[in-house]
Amino acid sequence: MSKLEIKNLSFSYDGSNKVIDDISFSVEKGTFVSILGHNGSGKSTLAKLIVGLLDKAGGQIFFNDVEITEKNLKDLQTKTSLIFQNPDNQFIGSTVEDDIAFGLENRCFPHDQMQAEIERFADSVNMLDHLKKEPINLSGGQKQRIALAGALILRPEILILDEATSMLDPKGKSTVRKVIDRIHKENKELTIISITHDIDEALLSDKVLILSKGKLVKEGKPKQILRDESALLEVKLDMPFVYKLEKELKEIGINSKAESIDQLVEDIWASK
Image (cartoon, rainbow, N blue to C red; front, side, top):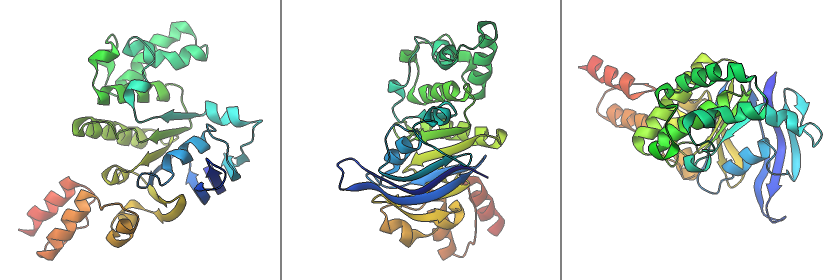
């Protein structure tokens, strides 16, 4: 059973030019899917359509095999969490603790159980020691991890990351990526959809979809899709660094099919 299925989805902001053009794909429960594309490809619009922030022009969206309509849209929205790219626009509380608790308070969660939940999910994103801090004292990466904790504490069935690391420095990107990767590996019930143009980030996923000019042009396993340099160049995307290095090494006689820099280093040493 698909957790999410998109059939012939279309959308236009002006009624004539399609930003999303007849897209169809499915996302299985518990998988991590990356949706890649250059600026203007329609990725973020697609995320907003999935959670009902925009009204589709055509097509169907199914959640747990049930078609989403105006009548049951709220059911999908209560089971979906969306994290945007700007960490400063997502911090609601005056402290880390208040921000993580915000969603629980809106759902009338028992107050005597709330602190334990806050601490549990702060710990899950390595922010337990920062609960009393104000947002002004946090880095962008730390704010995004707090946004993650606030989203996960609501126990969504689908977590959507809309360019969640695009405004972070390299250290912040790396930290958030590692947290997302660990969450995916530890929580087999959670389905993750990452909207991104970061090729290296997409390597963490189980499946990659590539959008170009509102159309779905490629889909498959990252190790297949992201090694196809010519296809990536056609849609203005680059190969992941590890695959580019792998290609250079092959030219000097070192063969490797590594999926990470650490594995690549091991292959280099093994060739000596």
